[in-house]
Image (spheres, rainbow, N blue to C red):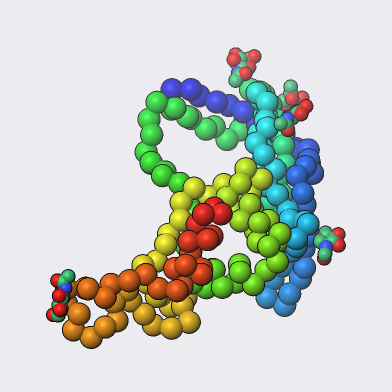
Length: 178
Ligand SMILES: *[C@@H]1O[C@H](CO)[C@@H](O)[C@H](O)[C@H]1NC(C)=O
Ligand SMILES: *[C@@H]1O[C@H](CO)[C@@H](O)[C@H](O)[C@H]1NC(C)=O
Ligand SMILES: *[C@@H]1O[C@H](CO)[C@@H](O)[C@H](O)[C@H]1NC(C)=O
Ligand SMILES: *[C@@H]1O[C@H](CO)[C@@H](O)[C@H](O)[C@H]1NC(C)=O
Ligand SMILES: *[C@@H]1O[C@H](CO)[C@@H](O)[C@H](O)[C@H]1NC(C)=O
């Protein structure tokens, strides 16, 4: 067990990476990307004794990053955090998103360079580094029509089983990108 009695100092603000170019809507704020510009996620670069905090909020949208340092001050009451690095309680396989037909339709509607920026903001080291994708089989509530891979009535041996245009137009290309 490591008992830490450390205080967080007032943190310094570091604006590195590409900032969120925000645009306000009645329902909230978004970060706007285009063919040449997209905000990035500041990488983790923290030295011993420091910490790095990422946050997002109405007033500071995007990935807002602050770096601060721990103070070792035993003379004041502090929150005590006990860390036992030899015990793991959770296994995380990764994080990701869904490649639905709607995803493909919307991404395909962008200029090619903006599509690249969008994919990068999800999957690259400058982005949120997704490493998982959920790919729906056939149609979902995010499709423009209801379909399966065999809509031929009574084809019980699935002899007409086949991928659909949506797979080729919306899913495979993006998955290849990602
Ligand atoms: C793309 O966004 C950047 C940053 O907001 C802006 O300077 C540039 O003019 C935009 N380009 C186009 C083609 O809209
Ligand atoms: C990490 O931060 C240090 C300063 O704290 C800086 O000199 C260095 O270039 C940074 N490295 C990267 C990869 O950003
Ligand atoms: C904090 O300071 C005390 C007293 O100087 C020292 O014994 C302890 O090792 C320090 N802890 C850390 C994490 O630096
Ligand atoms: C520790 O905290 C006390 C009380 O707030 C303060 O007077 C002192 O300067 C602090 N010491 C350090 C090394 O920050
Ligand atoms: C599937 O069923 C149809 C009609 O019942 C039959 O004509 C066809 O030969 C079958 N195909 C296979 C691969 O078993």
